Image (cartoon, rainbow, N blue to C red; front, top):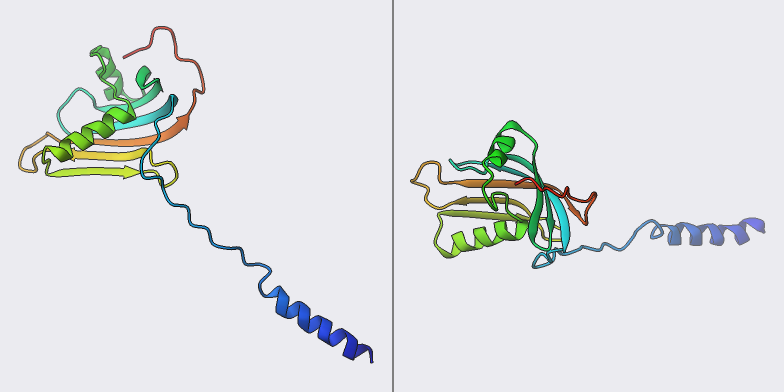
Length: 157
């Protein structure tokens, strides 16, 4: 008699337990555009082409202006020693540069974005595939919103 009482309960547990481990699948879509934060930092690796902005840089941006740029390798430190105004761009400036190159008919423009917040992660521009050393290639890493530390009063550029 006990088997008749327990058996339906076990069957019910087995049947209802088959769905217990499944979670609904939620696919998050990347935002269509990147919302530029007031304060952010990133590591910029700039390569390709013959130009002053070559190397790996740690960049801090406040209110869409670079307030601190540090060279992380010899090429970047040499580039910063040139003391060129606005040498190191913000991410918004890089996006604008890519959009302008696309509008002007560049042979290649690549703009890859982060799948979660759509900030740029890679930008490559080649105005003319037949020209030599006119390319610009950027990789963006270590993107953080907000400041991890206050920039030094004498920001290096």
